[in-house]
Image (cartoon, rainbow, N blue to C red; front, side):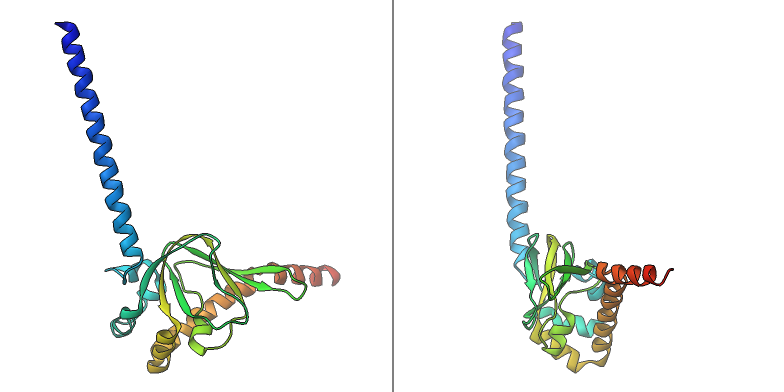
Length: 197
């Protein structure tokens, strides 16, 4: 009788484990398919709270841009902009972190800033339809909201408050580049050292 109850317990544990694994695989499969469908769809509710630029938008600006906003997954090292090209998109990071790199005349690359969910990349190039002067790639892969440069530029031209917000973010990114650039620190240090400081 004990052997039989032990067999029954083993069978019961096996069935429980099988059911648990099946439930977990079903949940993971559903979660992955939901994630992939959302990552390629229009922006879901509340995305503006995952990026500070989007959070700062007025309701009118968000409503005007909303049809063109699309959540995407950015792979690590994915290139989104290259020097000499006009930006096709503005990226508002929600989980990804982008490196803005200046290519030097001798071929070296200098990272001038990193941009995460506090701002956006491609702002000035998209707003002005001017060619980019930087290489921008994902230092850390993750989520972002993508907006076509044409729609972004149209909103800059239509709303002075939106243009002002864009300029403030572009200025903050430029200040970061000025303060954080290794080339700037190296040049400043050498000048100070030569001057005997």
